[in-house]
Amino acid sequence: MAARRRTSRKPATRRRSTSKPMISLLSAAESYMLANAALQATAGVNPVEFVTGKVNGNFNPGADGYSIVTLPELLGFSKTGWSLDKIGGEFGTKTAMDALRYNFNKNGAAAIGAMIAVPVAFRLARKALGKPLINPANRLLKQAGIASVVKV
Image 1 (cartoon, one colour):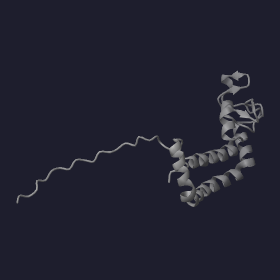
Image 2 (cartoon, helix red, strand yellow):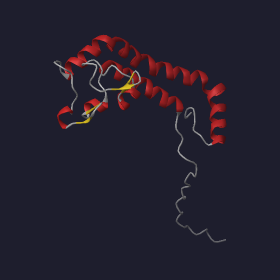
Image 3 (cartoon, helix red, strand yellow):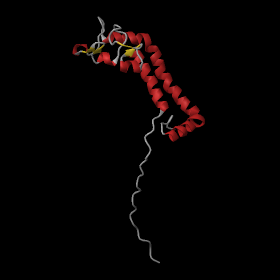
Image 4 (cartoon, rainbow, N blue to C red):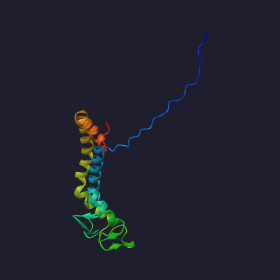
């Protein structure tokens, strides 16, 4: 009986997933909470207010003096429009560093506490809720084609 002939083995072909990439809702919520803590400590606003420039329902960048800093204010926008000389924000007689210092003195301790507590809380929640709640929620959301609560 003759020995079997050795042949080179073909590399396995990779299959590509046809499903859309999933977004982890828990990770998005955790990121938002961390961004909120950081912006409260530095700019005195939440992420939505920082990006849109609408604080308390009004769009008036730079009108508060110096304690509230928004992205449109830093880009040179005001209620009347855009101006090159307003880039970096208007802080009255104060500077941007004064605004940062004021907001950190006012909100810094709470922000640091949140930046420590939020990841710990989300890690514990993922472990505690993994099988009984998150896995069934992921299945339902996948069937609806929306997203996933968390990638387990």
